[in-house]
Image (cartoon, rainbow, N blue to C red; front, side, top):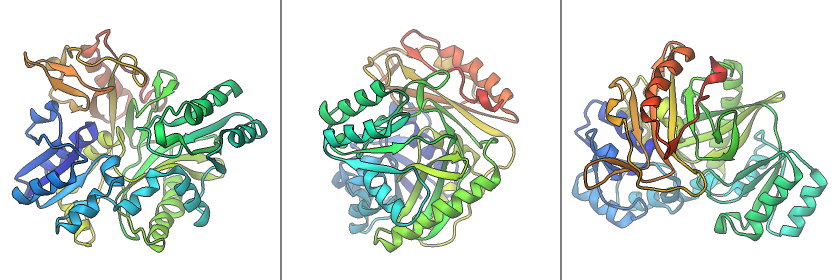
Length: 420
């Protein structure tokens, strides 16, 4: 099989790597990919992820068996529909189904309708009404941009000045453009957060190993929300009973509800969840693999990844098996200043000294004229390892992270610390 993956980040690097290790796979192409992927046997193609026409032409010319869509923007623009209209197999939800990620308000109304446990919320398009509601409810409170904001459109406000500032930035200053013309204000939930992804085909749900992401930029869960600064899988503090309840009360009803709504879902459904005293509840839905969760979950997949996706595309039951022992840990190296203003073009030092046992997933990197890897994004790369215990994995991984120490970059030193 010749396979195509659309996207350019660490998530897509992890997807491509796993496909390369599958039986019967001859070539893995990534569009546009990045220079870090290119050095590990992945064929990077200079086609933008939103150029559906050029991607379809490429897939036809190269006899691509099927395509996996990584990022959310092409999914919401309907790239899967376009591939299917051209007679090509593509793994990911349709434009209609991807709305569960594209609009927080839609997701909230959907959950209300199908009695899927989530925080109580209200949606606003008028700043004054939103501010009045905020004053009435008080803090702590959560304010979310309705549309896509690269994982950064959420403010968890613990004080009233924080909440007011977040609301002003979103609605009056248009910090996230059209994405924050509408905002969702929801109750603050207490509990432990975790990520549960599943392969979904209509009302069939095949859960993956659960993971824990670290959204805040700095140690101790301080600082602004980011796209994720590190992750690990599985999560020992989340019991199998909570996991089972989440599958039965959230994932399965969501898949069934989407089918009833005429938006049948085929792809990866990502549920960002929180284990509260009254059971697991939904914080957010995504319509694709999570990043950085994918980089620690896919290495745990024991079954053949390429065959699994092919089975789903042919409406057959896939073989989905994850490792039961040990754990996988990943830490993100980010550009100084991320998730706010940061510079690109800084040389990555120490990369060649990283142990071959460590997984390196490139996200925002490229090569300069002297063939040095330089930064080309906010989240630059992720290092990943496995271990029998969290202590062992952390010890091993952070020894390697030290080799990348450089004042132009930073990383959290407490990823997985609470799970030791």
